[in-house]
Image 1 (tube, rainbow, N blue to C red):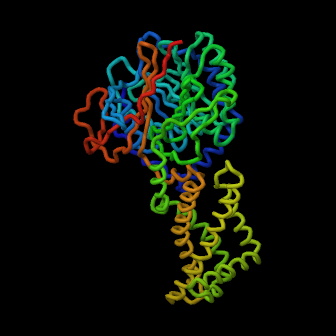
Image 2 (cartoon, rainbow, N blue to C red; image 1 turned 135 degrees about the horizontal axis):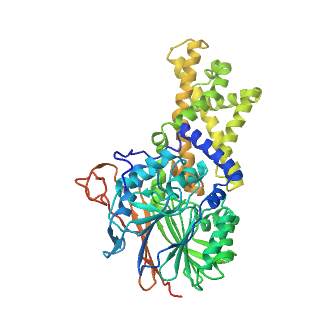
Image 3 (cartoon, rainbow, N blue to C red; image 1 turned 180 degrees about the horizontal axis):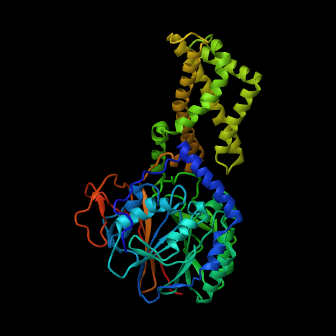
Length: 570
């Protein structure tokens, strides 16, 4: 098992509001969406690679680990990689002084989005394989096995890089990959199974995958219990957005699994927090979202999901049992958006250019007139009235204004059309008002300081430069304020409001054990604060991380809630 990186690259978290990053990601999303519709890589997989069932029934007891949404910033991804790689973890319970001992998983399941922002060979090597190889590059047999299901970010290059890394029997941070396709089935001790399902970019389960799982059910016995790992929590999205999002997995459960077995646990990532629902019909089916492997934090304060409807006919209710972080913590962290320009310094380039474009049309014609409105509240109102009149008389300015408003409408949360149009329009108009405000102030400051003669070339350039600077800062301030208000008071834009914060903390993963009695116990493991600085380990042995926190005692994992025990007897 050779080490892949002697000096791993410690990447920062992805700057989702960096205009250059936005352009690169948008290009990948467009291309992958076109390819995903017209060329499904899974069809080639099914023709080129035969795959059976991976059998672990030779053991009376087995430990499994589950992690999802990793491969973003180094600190968070490496922290979780170190915890997953430790031979054992002693975990305290938050509500008591009791602690439990857990062992490193014989099997590690990665549940989707193993890379951010988009899939590529170098991206996986630097942001995913690098941290895991540094944390656990070599160990003595028996070696752990690794399985992975792809998420939408893994699909952004058509699944090529994912398949190279996870479907060719390679070593991955001290573990060996086993699967040959992007989906798999594990036969576990005492009537338990774990299925990894690939739902591609459109919540779609392809025909070869359905046939594969049909063959798997032929090896199942009446009353077997199934754990399903999928990239997205359909039980959440189906209740918040569109019930149709549950249809594909409902088909899998009702038509493929239920004739013989029953789904006891659903696992998913995509939402970067921990949340557990449990059905109220007596089956104790667990629906666990655990996307805390290293990506930016998502809030638990968003669209409310205290009780949801699940099941093939959406006729079973499930109640929220636990969340991490709690909603009060999410609200507190949300206030950081008021510092948006400082957290996302390059975003101001975009708003600065927009303000420059709109102000550039306004200034040459109205620069002298804006000087007629003094720096006062009444003067501001007059300047706004004048700008509106000027825009209505200029087809080009009016067109640009409509484009700006349309852009903000397109940005607004798309899952509620009323909110999209109302909030998007208000957001766009607010920016246009600030454009006028900036132009009005800049004209007075430039000419009031007598740096140039009004109407001269130098005067015009100074005014344009001032419009860009004002847009760079105030445009970003307004964006942060919009995200704060939208999520805090309307529970919209949870993804946009927290991707801007780049929070590496509040991470989680799951450790599971099937014991000799056939009971499944789920240990939800969390860590509040990840280390930010690292140093070389002193004489690391086999299985030891090559980098450790600079300050001792920084790795403090704990149980998010008491272990969940499920009876596996038929």
